[in-house]
Each structure stands twice: as C-alpha cells, then as structure tokens.
Image 1 (cartoon, rainbow over the protein chains, first blue to last red):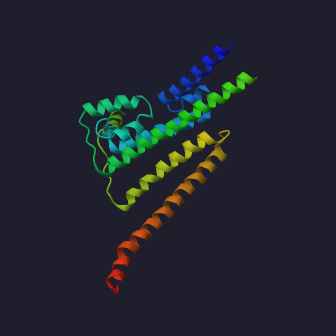
Image 2: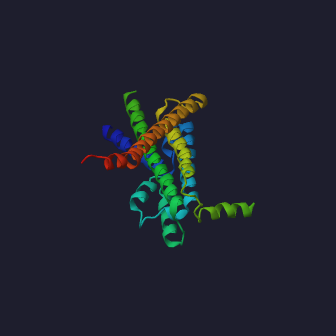
Image 3: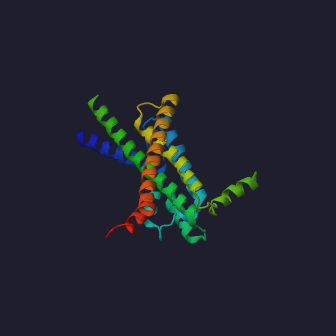
Length: 133
Length: 94
C-alpha cells in the first residue's frame, strides 16, 4: 500500500512536470488551478511569439547559439521542432532584432521553468495533504 | 482574411527592423510586464483580477525603477571615467 502511494506520488510529480513543460500552464491546469494556468499560458506564449516575430524563427538556433537554445527549449518541446525548421530553412536573423528575439524567447523559457518547478511543488504539497487526510 | 494570415505568418520568417538607438531600450517594458505577471501568478495565494493586477503593477514598477537606478549609476561611472578623470590626470603634478 505504501509502495503504491509512493509510486503514484512520483508518477504524479513527473506527469505534472511533463505536462507543464509540454504546454505552459498545463501543470497548474491539471491541479485545478485554472485561472493561474490561463494567466501563465497567455503570458509565456505571448512572450515567445513576440520573440520569434521580432527576430524570426532563425533566433532558435540549436547549432550556433546553444546556451540560448537551452533556455528556449524550456518553453515547450515544440521549440525543438521549430529549431529543426530554423536549421533547415534559410531564415535571416541579424542585429538588434536578433538580440531582442533571443532575449524574449529565452526569458519565456526560463519563466516556464519557474512555472514547471512551481507546479511540481504544488503537486507535492497536494500529495502530502491527501496522504495526511 | 487569408492575406492577413499570410502577412502575419510571413512576419515570423523575417526579422523586424529595429534601430540601435536609445528608443530600442523600450523593448524591455513588455518583457518586464511578462516577468511580473508570471512571477506573481506563481506567488499569489488566489488569482483575483484586481489584487493580482495591483501586485503585478507594483512588481513591474519596482523592476523598472531598479533598472533606472542601475542605469543612472552606470552612466555616472562612465561619465566620471571618460569625461572627468582624463583632465584631472593631465593636470597632475606627477
């Protein structure tokens, strides 16, 4: 019984974290924090979209801008797909627009990382509350 | 409708033209709004429109004021080092 609870506990933390990474705000959504999830989704997706609109898809560069890419990928796994499209296509990116685009998309990713950690922590608190009840 | 969609989609394939003048610094403001909103969304106990907006606005103001203070201090240091120190060093008795 204790083993089963522990398995469920670990599984719930992993699934919450994975969903929060898959869709910004998804982790909070399955924890019934709907308003919080909507606010997080809108803010992070808008930040990311503004970033790639300003700098073009070329700002997602898994080859020449690895540190930025590491932060960008925290937005969602979809960024990996965009990175492949950016690498195969000939998307021009340069100057101040490139800097601003990279900053926006990377900050969006780091904000989502904050939300992933927060969702996992909330799931942890909920599990403890349920086990004590 | 399709034309508008194509224009918007095309915008993601070409970078915007942004000059390297002081006004480009204003691009930090939407980013600070986003940071404030997401940070407060993870911190407040319950999301209610007015208290949440107020707390986000306070955080936004705090970040902007801190950036302004940091900018003034850095500008002052640069001004002293580049404008004030060279004439003083030229007049030195050594």
